[in-house]
Length: 172
Image 1 (tube, rainbow, N blue to C red):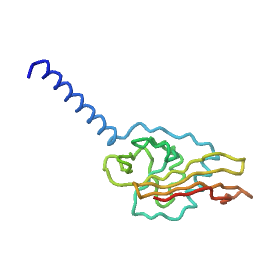
Image 2 (cartoon, rainbow, N blue to C red; image 1 turned 30 degrees about the horizontal axis):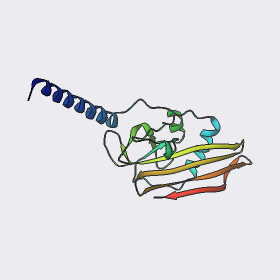
Image 3 (cartoon, helix red, strand yellow; image 1 turned 90 degrees about the vertical axis):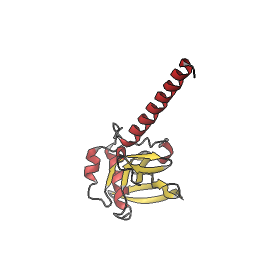
Image 4 (spheres, one colour; image 1 turned 180 degrees about the vertical axis):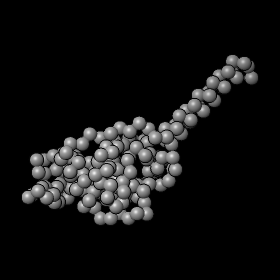
């Protein structure tokens, strides 16, 4: 093999190795979180939705985001809720970890560092219909054939939120 061919082959190996190392690092290491900005009313309805869900049990690891599944991207481009919000919902079972502590690989949610199988819970304010009416998309996902979600319109009457209308759902 000529020296120029060897140099090209070596350069390609270095390029491939650096790409693999960068990808591995991205998936394992904690990235700088991209925080969601929540208005007071967004935080209120998201907390209500989380508290209204049945107990999902303690046998799974759950992460929490406001990013709808349709916007996740290849590796889980999730917005992380602020630490103050996580403290506010800290008593909810199961406990929800920040989305930045998870990633998506081959359509599966995994915990960074441990690579353990996990679940992503999302609660997204789709639109405020009025001051007292909001459409919310929520769901959970771990892997293909392991998730579900739907959209609900909530209405606030006499200071209390309640379900007004189910606008769609799915299960995989």
